[in-house]
Image 1 (cartoon, rainbow, N blue to C red):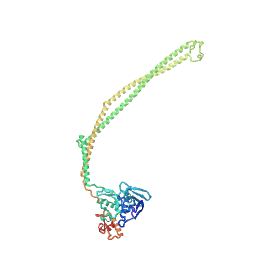
Image 2 (cartoon, rainbow, N blue to C red):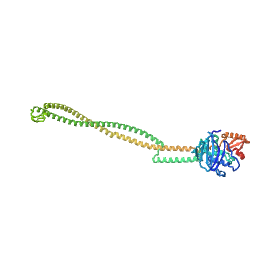
Image 3 (cartoon, one colour):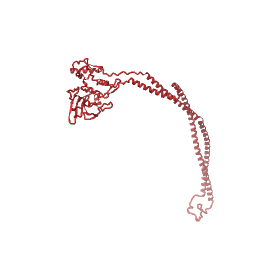
Image 4 (cartoon, helix red, strand yellow):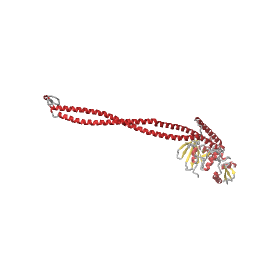
Length: 513
């Protein structure tokens, strides 16, 4: 037994004031039989409606007390049990699992949604997301449970039709129906099929491409006309190469001129820094000379004061002490404290002479320093004059020769670069025109051929095992004259012992269906 798929175990109709009506089903083929007007068709309609059919069951008197239908089913993979429930008036479908949880499912199939009853049932069968053909050009779509429902839930009208059970009788759906049957037989879908285009579509696309290419070519040639460019692409490329060579030469010359100017700029910068240092030293020397002059005046002033003190001391030493040498008072008015022992006028005179000799020494040193400072100031003046001359000479050279040379080389480079940019635009336009010509040539070389139709019919090889299964089943049923079963590709139906199924009577057609 296959481990994919499911089987229906029960159909239940519920109503608010009536006892539930239950139909028990089993794994395998279930046949609902009975007299007319006993609800056989209604049972099939209820099951189909719960499984996603858009049309509600017919309104029959016996079913009016019921308002909801429930279908219980069992998955083969893990024997999980599920229940699908739907109002007989329509709407979404409720899925209830064995653990009591539930969710709402849309009754309409959607290839982009998993919350549909179609996706749920197809996933149990391992068919969710499978692709089937829509036409012979190879257009595909996802399989819907509606594609399979009619093969697994057969009403009394379909079971006796002369057409193959594969087909519903609608010619526009024959390709889809054959693809669905092939999918069920082989398990292989049509997702690998590449859709082909019709010749008229190819012609329309070719005309569209030509119009686009004409429009692009006209725009490019208009831009060339605006630029007054009558040169060919090869001539522009040749001129572009010559311009590249000229640019390389000007670039080298510009680099050389910049290097020369940079060297002179460095020389000028060094001279300027040296001049700044000389000027700063001159300012320091100038301030020192001013301070030295003040110091010399101070030393001379000190010498005059010390000389005066020495002379006064000598003279005081020669006088009699009639009066106090300190305060000048007479003896009878002399302050006792002034009579204490202190420096004598002679000692003061000697000290002043000694201090004068020291100041003379300092003054002599200062004079030497002043002479040295004057010499340095003179040398700095000479250096400043030289540096100023050097700075003027270097600056004039920069302004007169080097900078103009750099500016001329730079202007030449910019001019050549602008010309190259213009040539690049021309080359781009010519390159696009060449691409358009290449596309146009490729388009002319394309052959508009009618694509071969894709084989959509189910083949004999694909149904070999299927026919053996049917033959074994007929033998178990002891169907008369059913010793050999083959498949007809033309009729897309089985042939039993050389007799097409469509040629049998209703009863046999119902059995072989």
